[in-house]
Length: 355
Image 1 (cartoon, helix red, strand yellow):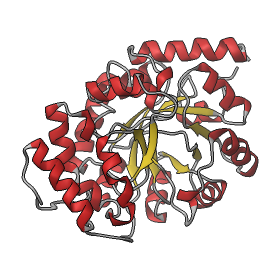
Image 2 (image 1 turned 90 degrees about the vertical axis):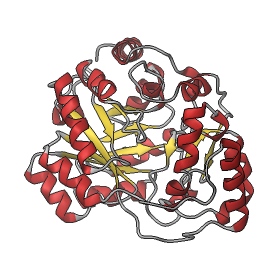
Image 3 (image 1 turned 30 degrees about the horizontal axis):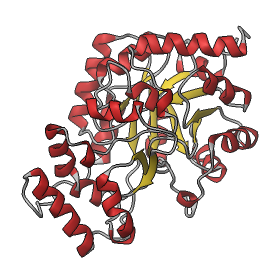
Image 4 (image 1 turned 120 degrees about the horizontal axis):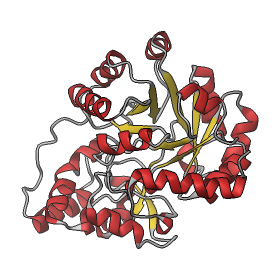
């Protein structure tokens, strides 16, 4: 059967369906647990969480399920590029703050959570699966995962990145197509500009690597999962599809925007975080689009827009929200995570059969 392969065996799950580790509050313990309970792999998007917050979330998940689940983190990057906004960008952000009624030029504060503390939580809690994006995991952390029997999964946007991840010791690789919502997982030079689609990426990566490939990007239903398997993937990772579920912590306006988005409604932007990410286009993204070169690099810009995003969320101003989504959001369905997993299985089996 399509459900029995190296991925399901290594991860200890029944279904080769993975809920992407979307950071920023979308992946509530309820969502993660519901997906795992349904037979897939739920993933906590912990990139913006402190070590203590990660521990609290992991314990909440374990109160809801005894099934395997994962935690996803961002590999810290060396500071490159701009670290302060250009004047045009600063003025646009301050005008946005005035419209939201919040102070201009706020103190930068903490730019990112300490990765050491995040990893300590992952290791001490002995999570079954650890996935990461934006780079390669340091050798000492990889060794620590292997010592504890934690399955390590990296993210690649090109075959080159997949090869580098396999050489680093990961157990599996997520092949992230350019259709994917949220941040691009690119980490090698030139990779961010090489927008390889999933249909081209998966078979080439599957042919090149000796470890399992997990397909991600624009997969919303059984058709996408079946196609991914035909291309050589051993599992499918879905983000946007699960963002729309009842258990998701995504803002109501975010969900509405995704469901009503056309295939042309999402764009790649650096406006909110300083790193390329795909989301439903809005006024803030459009205002900063002409000034890409003046936007500080990630994670500085992400910290600089935090107050804007938080105020926009409270005031329900979708024109200033980061509404990450893949290119097939219109195929989404608003339902419980359990129901979505069940439908995905039914649709996939209708196409692939019980093989």
